[in-house]
Length: 163
Image (cartoon, rainbow, N blue to C red; front, side, top):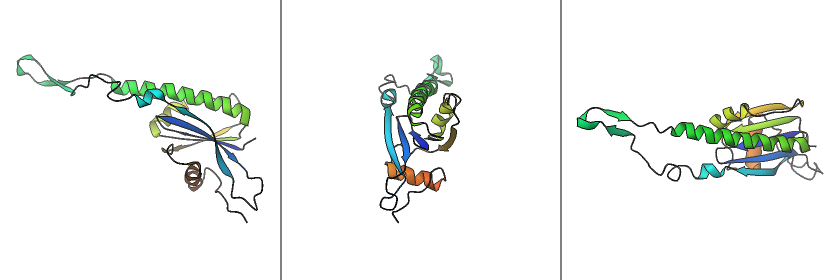
């Protein structure tokens, strides 16, 4: 059983960690974040020109030289929907992993906009699990760097050196 479960997410990926104590604390540094899984948002990678193949300049002139008006092709709504779908995938994976690991705490680290989408879909199914949040994109960092950032934010205990 891990005391703490950590989810680090951005629009393109989500990584799932557990905080594991070391077997011999006097000889090893610890506790350590251990990566348990990863989700990649395939739709996020096709964003931009692939999704919006008909790139418009955003302006158009009315016939006869009248004033300009802007196009609204609802790109921001499309992006929001992609984030909502990915947030549901992240929540489902968190549900599956926390059932097997039984953590007491979940630390959720995500970009501000994605964090908002995740709040609406995370479920603990009545379990006594506290959820703590940090609005930051740490997805591209290694496990030790993530641990260091979260320790500085007082969300995880610092990784101690062997005695």
